Amino acid sequence: MIIYVAFDDTDTLDCGRGTGKLARWFAEVLPSGCRLTAIVRQQLLVADDIPYTSHNSSLVCLIEAPGEELKPQLIERGANHIRNHFVVGSDPGLCVVSEHNPAIRSLKEFGRLCLVRKVTQAEAHAAVGSGHLSGHGGTNDGVIGAAAGVGLTALGDSGRLNEWIEPGFIRGLPQETTAGFLREKRIEPLAIDKNAAWIPDEDLIDNRGWLRPNWVRGRAVLPVLAIVPNRWQTLPKKKGDEA
Image 1: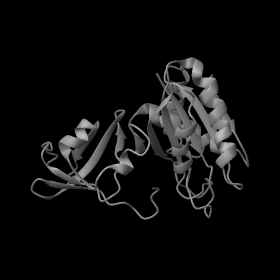
Image 2: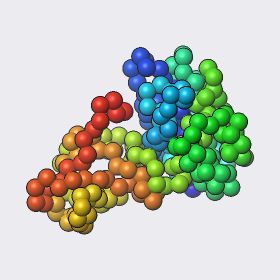
Image 3: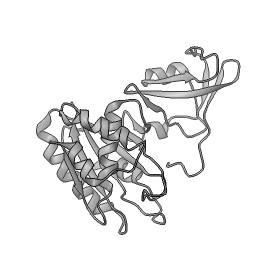
Image 4: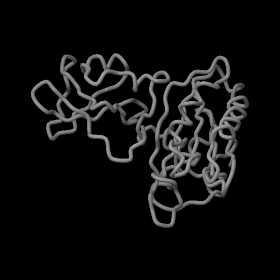
C-alpha cells in the first residue's frame, strides 16, 4: 500500500536549501519494510495575502509500506525528521495519510481549494479527518500545504516529480536517452506541439540536465517539444526552480 507523507514550509529564503531536499533525505530514515517510490512537488496558490517562503509549494513522499500498521512509525519519524532539519523561522507542517483512508476524498477537495483561494489551518484539520496532521514550529501554517499536497497528489493530476522509483534515480539519468528507455522506467514522453504525435521508442530526448516529469493520472509524464526529426527536448528549467 501507499502512505503519503507530506512536508511543507521547513526552510527560509536564506537557508540555502528547500523543502524538497528535506523530503529527499526522509528516504534515509524510513522504517524497515518501507520504500520511497516517488516525491511529488505540488504548487499552491501564490497571492499577496498568502505567506510563503519562495514558491508556496509542498513536497509529498509516496511510501510503499506493507500495511497500515507502519503509519505510526512514519508519523514519529516524519516529526523527528522535521525537528532535525527544519530551519528556525519556518512554519513546518506534516501530513501522513494512507491511500485507503476515507479522508483522501476530502483532502482532494481541500487541495483543489488551495489552488483558488486562501484557506485556514482549521479547514486543513477538518479535511484530514482520521489522517495525521501536525504543526512543528512558528505559526504552524505548514499544515495547510502539507494537507493540500496529499490531496493533490492523491488526485493524480497535479504536480511534478522531484524523485522517482528510488532515491537519486532521476538525477542520475544521462542528459540524452531514447523514448523507449524512459518508457522502461515508467516515464512516458508526451509531445505537446500541435500535432501531439506519439514518440517512437528510438527517438532521442534531451532533458537539458534537469528531468522533472509531471504527475498525470498518477503516472510520470514528460512533456517534450520536437527540435529536429526524431529528436526532442524537455521544457526549459525556470529560474528559481528547485533542484
